[in-house]
Length: 229
Ligand code: 6PG
Image 1 (spheres, protein in one colour):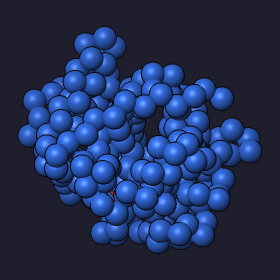
Image 2 (tube, protein in one colour):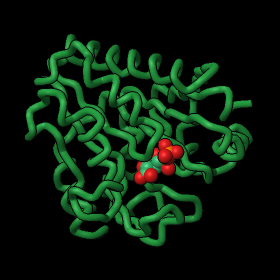
Image 3 (spheres, helix red, strand yellow):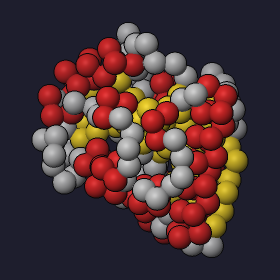
Image 4 (tube, helix red, strand yellow):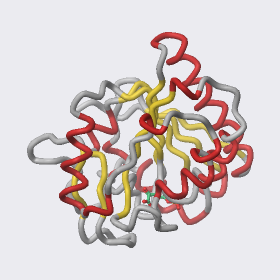
């Protein structure tokens, strides 16, 4: 298994991190669109990326070339306020002109197994992602890959069902560690003192979910001092 190459980008506070992260996403988009005429991005859930998504709302970019996927989703009704897709739409996607057929929401309202099967079918023809955005939980989980659980499908499917997740809701669907790693660029966004223990585990080489994301080009971790010190 490829070693995890990590580039740490430390910021004094979350707002400086958010500005830098937004710029990095737009740079990734420009490179991909200039080279291939399209940009595929996998969105992180949770609360950390919300401000970054809000800043993307006013970005100058060719939205018609963007193809949006999700790294994980909670098994809740499609318009539930706690859905990762609802957060992304409210903060950003509803405010820009990405063609609707290019935003691929995980059908998590169907339950873990059906959602994983449908999303795996959708991804069957998808190439390496240009950019994957990820958060990190206080137990060093990422997407919906949690410590002590399965991070890969036995049959190699790109999307996996998740049950008994320690972070509610317990039923979820997630891209696997290997599918999240099939990306030209992976960026983690980590803020707040609550993430310090998880950071120690990660830096200490523990076999935690964030450490299982190992793209060829390595990962870029955008972290504020509160989470880092
Ligand atoms: C989710 C996310 C999850 C999140 C981390 C960090 O569904 O909750 O996919 O992996 O990224 O738990 O969450 P915060 O950004 O809210 O700390």
